[in-house]
Image (cartoon, rainbow, N blue to C red):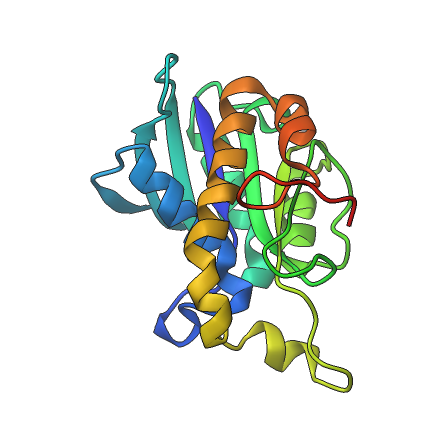
Length: 201
């Protein structure tokens, strides 16, 4: 079984914000995987489906019900409660990244938090940095703009118009990472842009 975790803040106030792109990715991938029922479990919202394609492997989706900076408790609860799920092999955590241009994605098999407080709490709660993650770029505010205001604001109209294709591209990457392995997905998607072109940026 695989486990996809989208990081974000709960509640209507934060819905659709840049900081909640992890939630948006989880929701979109859950639709692909046929999740039909979501329950309050593992200190968050949890549902199960199956990966598309040949394997049809079971996959769980978790949106922590804690605030972003306390995401680790929910992830740790899911890993403890789901039999046979190993963080290094089966987990994929998705979250926003200020240091990537808007819509660009990066996969990694392990590593530090890179200044992301939600991921830092997951690392602390699990006691390991050895688990795959998917970063979705939200860019940075214009010169002099406040970072906190920026991440907690909703995407602009132009960004929203682009997001469906970008989210679909990120879901393709996540699906590949979960079914074929993160190394395969990194080779295929790191540096690629939605639509199939590539860039060294």
